[in-house]
Image (cartoon, rainbow, N blue to C red; front, side, top):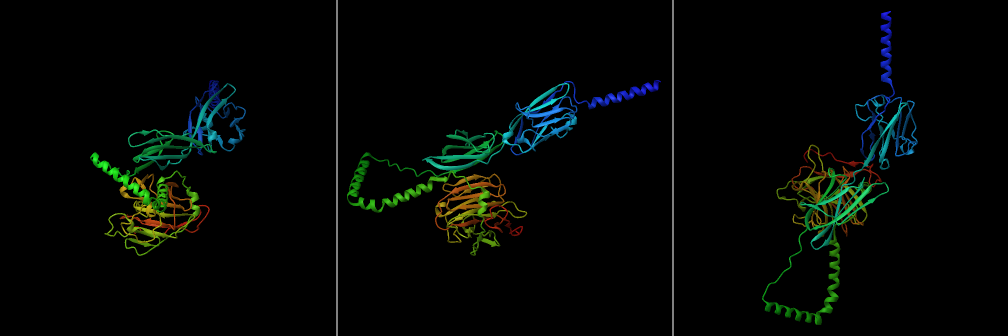
Length: 507
């Protein structure tokens, strides 16, 4: 009898234990959430929601909905099965997720929402609602969507005698980013700060400041002070020639004034018609063209996107004219490490073909070689010079028909445009391949880091006559340069393959 009673009690205890662990919920449901949740545009995210204390939610009703749309749930779980979402914008994008890697899912009371391909329209409040026969509870999770935009693009125009107008622009942000100007000493107050929205909901920002002609200025854009994207421009514009001030005795000044007045009177009677007819029209024309040439250094122009530029791919050939300072073989070239070359000059410059008098053209040059660091000494651009090879003292400025981007190991933190004045651009990452895009008719020359598909720098110029691709392998850099050729020219997408010759480890 005793043994039978003990066995009965033991079985009853086991049954009660089983019912307690399988109970759908406690009499008082408590829902906990973690909010806010920040997620980048296009990613997947999880909105954490769980029961406390932990208990199975498999037999409960679970409903996720937005705002007051209780009857149009994003997720509805009833009778241990999921029903199709009634909100079409979430169809195929929602399911139950795990609040952390150690979560046991629904069986452990984790009712988190997993959302795929997060969009700007998904931003807002989400309600996690859990109910049973004994009661219900709910919690609110705030989803904040972010998107990081482009690295700021700086442009520069003359403003006043001792000031330059610097513009900074960046696009593709969400929400509205913060833009900050600074020089080496302090933050700068912008003259203008404008935001604009595109159809996708992303935000663009544009601002400008006036700065001295010799300064280092940065423009930073970001969603927080911690993770800002920055562009830096170093200006080194020579001051105008100092005005000559003659200090002399009053009598000498009077004599000079009388002399000048007599000279002007004679000029008016005898020489003015000739000067007006023969000299002034040419001078006006010269001054106008010079002003136009100097007006924009880094103009406010949106560089052509790399994908668009690649549609105009052209294969470049090097002109090998027996330059003793350069070694060329199968489109691969480097300097000959000649003892006469003490600095990077036009002695080691090479011209490419074909030349261009119109249209859009794009080519690429490799700056890497096996077992060697990425090349740091190089020039890449275009020229209208024809007398190759050039002398070492040949001027290589824009006024002499050279437009190029250069890199130097002595200036490892920046690239340099050979504009007048010289402009330094920050090195965000060393390119293994540089892309060059020439829009002859549009007056654009842009340089790209092909690997990360970013614009290094862009300049505008009025091209006249035939211009040619231009290269310089620098001095003492063991890494050769290589002209990359595409098997399918002019493709409308990036499906063409670039041919690379096998470079030796030491060329």
